[in-house]
Every structure is written in structure tokens, then in C-alpha cells.
Length: 106
Length: 115
Image (cartoon, rainbow over all chains, first blue to last red; front, side, top):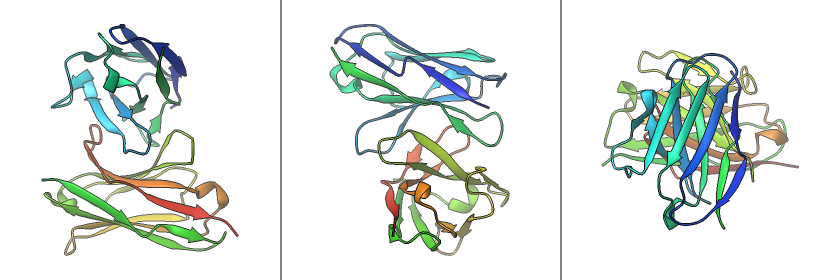
């Protein structure tokens, strides 16, 4: 199953609403998760399946979607949110990641 | 506190073998789903392998037949045995826990395949 993330990069300002899209090549139900990764660090789980927010993740992050189309939304971008974001499908093996979306400071 | 600490990375010649280790604390490796994920320099994340608590294993096509995931319950440690290494296997290798999303990750260990 291929996952296509868009955009591959974006520039935004603190306080902006940011939306990242992940499209699956076939239906995956709600078996999609989102990660945040900062340079030189391991990924951090933001949402697990069914778009449930991981414990400790700020409520400005939200995930939605099912089937083939999914979104990660950051309602009000904060300085610590500048990072690369990845989606991953857990519906079937081989598990796959999207290509990533780099969120940069405008 | 849950912790994962990888070791075993390094410089290896093409065709060589390496064993990565992931020492876990704060939970029992044999009771959870464990994964290896890698990231080539400047590239995105790539899932490598998963082992279930039942012992079932799964592999990416790119490593099937060359890599083996295993665990030592007495040491609470996860392993990745890597054979016939290629230049394209060069990456930071992370171990991670979880089956509905990986909630804990190690710091990663760098494997460089080069002559």
C-alpha cells in the first residue's frame, strides 16, 4: 500500500492553521497513524489508529479520515511544531510510511 | 519508565553481517509488538520488520531473506540480524514498541555499508 503525503514541504507562521494530507493507494480503514520527527531525533507518535490523540500530545493536533484520505491538522502552529511529519499505515504488511512533510518557518 | 537502547551499528563492508541489539526496560519485550524502522541519511522513514508477542515475524521486501528479527526473553532484548549487507542498507536503525502506532522509540544506531 502506497501512501502519498502532500505537500512535501510547507512554510508557515506561528499561529497558522496547517493541514497535511495522506492518501492511501487502497482502503485502509482507520489504520493510519501520524508521527512528528525533529532533526537528529527519533519520531514521536502523535495519533494512533482511529485518529486518537496519543497521551501527552497537545490538543492543537488532530487527525481525521478513513478509507484512503487522511489529514493531520495543527490548529495554531507553535514554534516547537516546526518538524517533519510522517503518516504510516498499519492495515497490512508490508507496513508503509508516507514520504514526509517538512514544516518550515515562514 | 520505558526505555529502548540500540547498539551494534558501525561501518561494515558490502556483503558483511551485523547484529543490532535493542535493550528494553520498563516493559517486557516478549509481551508486546516490537519493530525495526530505518532512515537513510536525509531520507524518510522505512519500516523494516515486526515481531509479534506470539513470535510471528514480518519483513519489508527489501530485506526479506537477508534480515532476521528475534528476541531474547531472558535479556529483554530485541535483535536484528543483518546478512548480505548492501550500500542501500546504510541508515539509522531504530527499534520501536507498539502495534497501533509506535509509542516508544530508541535513539537509533547508525549502520554504514561501504568498502
